[in-house]
Amino acid sequence: MSDRGLGWVNWLPTLVLAGIVLAAWQAAIWLGDLPPILLPSPRAVLIAGWESRLELLRGAWVTGAAAVSGFFASLVIGTLVAAVMSQSKMLRLAMYPYVILLQTVPIVAIAPLLVIWSGYEFRTVVLVTLIISLFPIINSVTEGLLSIPADRFDLFRLYGASRWEVLFQLRVPSAVSNLMLGAKTSAGLAVIGAIVAEFFVGNGGANYSGLGTLMTGWQTLGRTAPLMAALCVSTLLGVIMFVSVQIVSTTILRRWMDTD
Image (cartoon, rainbow, N blue to C red):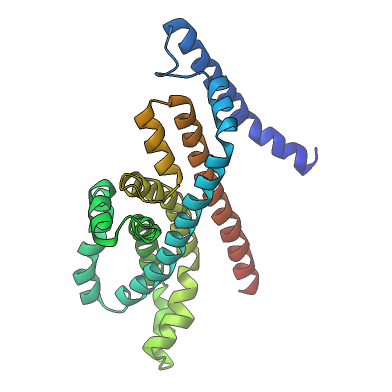
């Protein structure tokens, strides 16, 4: 069997599960006699999505731009913070509690404050996205920078390598795979952060049309079908982000290994 045929076989369980979920969804509506405002049918969601396709496409573009911007900002800032933390145990002890705060403080508690401080603007959404995406990068890259074989570190010291030479010639190459791992985690979180921020940015009456803003408006109007269509588009956007980073990560790691 060709590789293409095997690819379809690998996707078969996912497609079967999707069919089961859709069937159970429709059955729940029939058996429970549920009103459309509570649970619209899959067909109603599909129709609502098509009728609102221009709004959804525009919202996906805005949300995607914010998610990508915050994600790339987290890559740069997270890597720099990890590089600083890797240089000294004292720095790690001083900085790590604040890094943990990025993960433990609920983003829904931070977002309203950031909206007050930064305004009902695109930059606020990017800032929230950055905060929620930052921890996996810092944590993964720091671990990679510190996880170097003792014998190689001793060899560098034996030849009188400077701190910068150790960082860029030994620690950074060892942390590439960790960076890719952290990036895959952050990619999905970036979409979540963007949509959560849009819930608050949209409430300010600003001229902002992200998916989170659309979902808030449709929820207020009781339009459940387009709301669920927006949820599906948001999920698809997260999947696209993750798969894109996965492809880039695989390509980079393969070339990195070939170079080594």
